[in-house]
Image 1 (cartoon, rainbow, N blue to C red):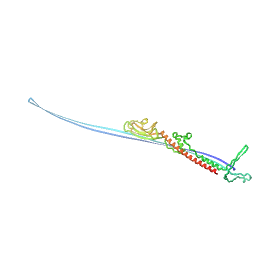
Image 2: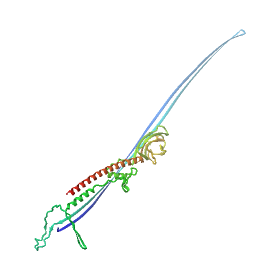
Image 3: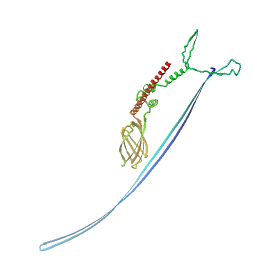
Image 4: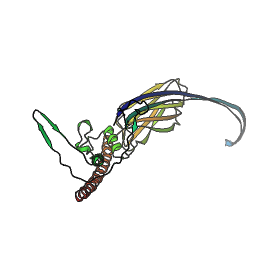
Length: 393
């Protein structure tokens, strides 16, 4: 072989494109409602009374004394007349004014980030052989040009014996490889055997990836092993918001009576705090109103307001399942509530979710390990068959 050329070049390029998009939307709606009712009522009562009284009396007396006759006669007449007139008039006027205002604000903020990374890697390997011999036994430039060497490669099944020659202090080892393609086949078999990798048991993994049981399985570990064994985790929200609206109407003056209702929290969650948006109209003529909220866990809150709408935040509720809510107040006609409970997952439900997905991952690992053993046995049998064929040759 006249010459040999080796050349290797590598080119790496990284492109990064980041796009940030932010959009804001705000909608404000104000409603004002005023109603007036005037009432006038007049009552008139006329009474007339006439009283007449007439009295006639007469008396007659006859007597005899010593030959003399005595005759007396008396009479009386009395006439009484009375008349009474009375007029009674009552006038009642009333005026009722009802004012209702409501403000609604909707705000939306959307942020989007798109990151595009392109990595290019180009590797070029050049290996050239010059199979042209040089002619050195002539002085003719045309004849001295290199010419191609032609030949035939034949496969020969033959055994060679290698010898070691001892030349004193210098020792030379001479080896010959009769079958170059055999090395390629052996290397291919080894590379094929390296494709099979033993599945890792999450319960015996090393370092921070070890997951012995469902109680020790965090969300990060479950997502890591689920990605390896292609397991789809069941959906779970560790926090949520529950909306509970209601309206209360009071028909009496002054203090409003206590109204009790039952509120149910979503299964598996605990209400840590609540945000309350309210609006109302007053029953009386006072300039302020009072709201009382009494929860079944002993939390009792009282609020005074001069405005007819507002927001209340109550922390440290720790309410779950179904609880009773008592609502009362002062100088209230009708009040509308919108309660937003901030929920956190119950530890028992979180542990059940971890155990369920842990068992699914372990089941997928056992199936993968069983498939690995079957493929390993199959590969071992193929290699044994190839060894037997080579021995027969």
